[in-house]
Length: 170
Image 1 (cartoon, rainbow, N blue to C red):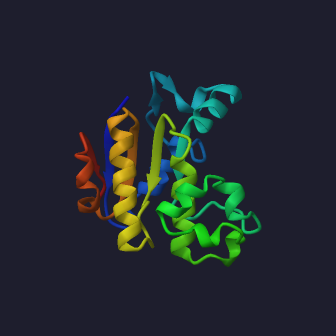
Image 2: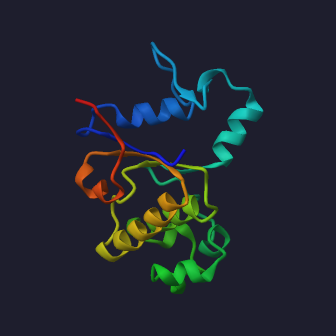
């Protein structure tokens, strides 16, 4: 709890594969993935559902549905204003730029104060101002004791979180 761990390495080194294993989308050939002492791949359906619902997850591929409206994903207009997206509140996801989609995806993952954040290249496609806003959000969440697991090929971008653990994949 409250730990920031970074999994870093170049493109193609297996970072996303590790994340997909944690999310039980892929099964490792050897070893185990433990969460609070429980093997992820031996949880009941209910336990897996609880884990996923209590986590903020942002995949490298944006996981928003194209015909959802922004204000149904993020009903809090103040959050949209903070990131200069309030004028997009009535837009469909498919009408947004890639950077706007990434911003909405990150807001969706952080707005409910999840227990753990699993983030795969979370700042990819964001403008400088949006990155700065999310840095503040992440720092506030770290102060609240949230756990971060960040997968990235640019580890220097996330040094502001002072990761306690860094796993380097080659």
